[in-house]
Image (tube, rainbow, N blue to C red; front, side, top):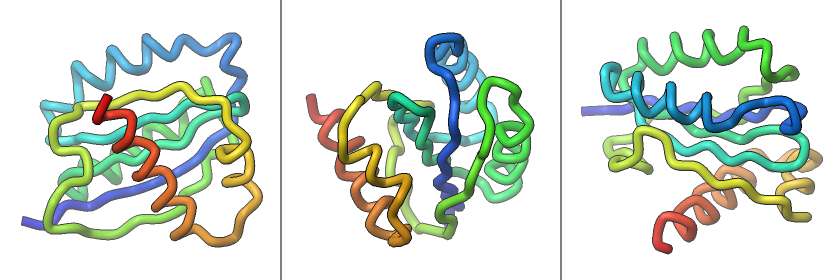
Length: 127
């Protein structure tokens, strides 16, 4: 089976956004749709990778794009894989304030950002 993945960034004021509300809803609803993924929050907003059946990933991204808790939603990368990157996570999460994350926003090399995100998420999951 092939899974669609979609990687995006958005801007948000994390002082007013309840991240745990987002995570609780994702962890409750994602299993019903076969969605897994990882959310990374940083000083200026979010990076997130979602994966699962194509129609469900597309619908979720549409919902995310309309969510008032953030803005400037920008798809960075999407594609298909035979295996999931985060098979055991309805939604993994990491809050990080790092210079590296700030630099992701300014790079034109989308593949480099995706690889760095996956490496950072996987190092968190090994803890």
